[in-house]
Amino acid sequence: MNTMLENRIVERLHQMDDAHLSEILDFVEFVADRKRRSKLQEDDDYLLGVEASLSEWAGQADEEAYRDLNKAR
Image 1 (cartoon, rainbow, N blue to C red):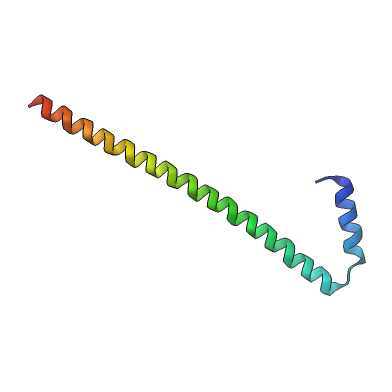
Image 2 (cartoon, helix red, strand yellow; image 1 turned 180 degrees about the horizontal axis):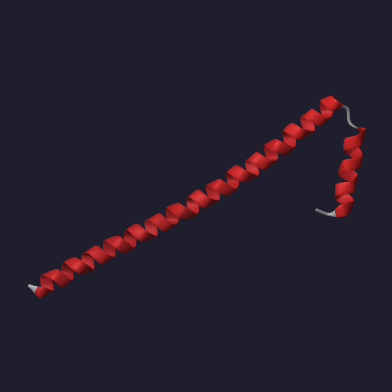
């Protein structure tokens, strides 16, 4: 984090009363949780894509094996 920005944030926090600090903490936790959930969704989307690719590949491999088996007969 930018040091100047961090210093400004800390200065402002020291000027706040406990009720406002609690609200700020709730907001920061909300933003952090939203970011974490977004990352999890990206990971899920990636894994679904991998699963689809593997399923397609497995299907093609099965078809090729079936054709090879029929040619051998």
